Length: 270
Ligand SMILES: Cc1cc2nc3c(=O)[nH]c(=O)nc-3n(C[C@H](O)[C@H](O)[C@H](O)COP(=O)(O)OP(=O)(O)OC[C@H]3O[C@@H](n4cnc5c(N)ncnc54)[C@H](O)[C@@H]3O)c2cc1C
Image (tube, rainbow, N blue to C red; front, side, top):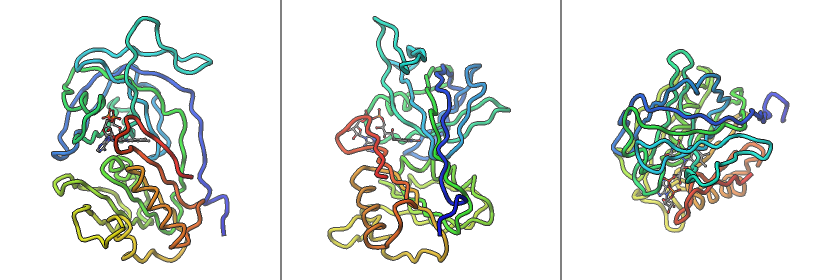
C-alpha cells in the first residue's frame, strides 16, 4: 500500500552559479579522481538528495577560469563574445559547510571535456558549477533499497549508503569496466554489495545487470529501486524489473547518466 510516507518529494531550489577553486585532488582508484572544491561562492550550497546533479561549467583549458553565466528570468545567460563553457552533469558527492568543501568524483576512462579537465586538475585550478536546481528526495523508510549502476553512479550510491539509517537494508549492484575501479563503500546500513563486470559469464542475450538481478531474491516489504548508468543498460534493467519482477514503476527511479557515442546525455525513464 502506498502512503505519503513512501512518496518521493520534488524540491526546487533557486538556481545559482558559482566559481570554485580546486583545493585537493585524491585518487580513489585508477579509474576515479575526487576533486575537492572550495571558495567563497560555496556559501549556502544546498543538496537535498543523493540523486541531485550539478551542471559543471568546464573551463576551456586546465587552469583557466570558465566564463560564468548570470542567472536571469530566462535561466542561464552567457556573456556575448566570450567562449561558452562546456556543461556536464555530475553528482555532488559530499558538501561540508564547516570546512567549506564540495567533493565531486570523476570517472576517468573516456574522452570528453569534463574528464579531460578532471584528469589534469590540480590545486588552484578553477571550475564553475550551476545548481542543483531541484532535488528528488526518496524517503529512507523503505524496508529495502536496491541501488544499481555503473561507475558514473558510484558517487550517488556511495552517498546514499552513507545517508541511509542503520535500520535500512541496501542491495547494491555496481558494474565496473575493470576490477581495480571497485572502491570501499561506507555507511551504517545493512548492505549486500555485488561488484560485477561485463566480462563475467552472463547468459547470452542478457547483460550482467540482468543476470545478477535474476539471481537475487529481493527482501519482503516495501522497497525502492534507484538505477543509473549507460542508456541501454538502464533501459533494459528497468524493463526487466517492471515486466519480469513486477515492480511498480512508481517504485523505480531510473536514469541514463551517459550514452554510448553521444556527448552530454541525460535522460529519465520514469
Ligand atoms: C545526473 C547525472 C549525474 C552524474 N554524476 C556523475 C559523477 O558523479 N561522476 C561521473 O564520473 N559521471 C557522472 N555522470 C556522467 C557524466 O555526466 C557523463 O559521463 C559525461 O558524459 C561526462 O562528460 P565528458 O565531458 O567527460 O564526456 P562527453 O563529452 O559527454 O562524452 C564524450 C564521449 O565519451 C563517452 N562517455 C561519456 N561517459 C562515459 C563513461 N562513463 N564511460 C565510457 N564512455 C563515456 C560518450 O558516449 C561520448 O562518446 C553523471 C551524469 C548524470 C546525468
